[in-house]
Length: 160
Image (cartoon, rainbow, N blue to C red; front, side, top):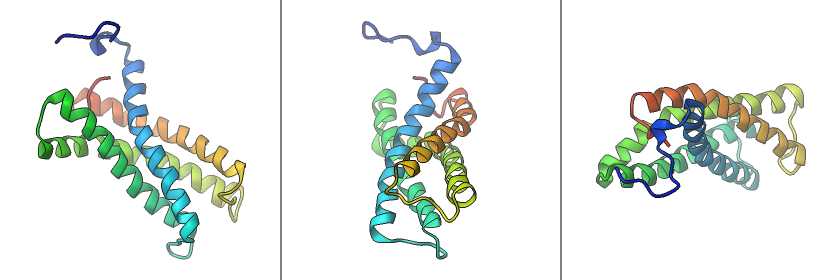
């Protein structure tokens, strides 16, 4: 394989480097989806089972999964030179478990700061809410780490 000048060979990179890039790629789609969904829940005053937090969980997951799959699709298709349908399936295989693991960590953090620490919850318009949301995303990064390591090891996700 021909490499562009300055592009490192992913096979020669340390494992922590490869894994952190794989998780960050997943986390980018998740984070953008989560931020968009959070504001939509707020703007539309959505609730699920009477709680905005549960609507956050549902919509955050839907948006994060959709964006995560799109991000993965546009990475995998050119790298593997495969067609659209195979590309969609490869993206779903590569990122679904990763997104689930990321969202579990994120949702655990959100639940802790909304239901336990600051019950009945912080307003989404506060800086504290978004600071704690970022910390929850860091938690999501670490809960997604082992899943991404496994996905890269079995070849469902590309080494970066």
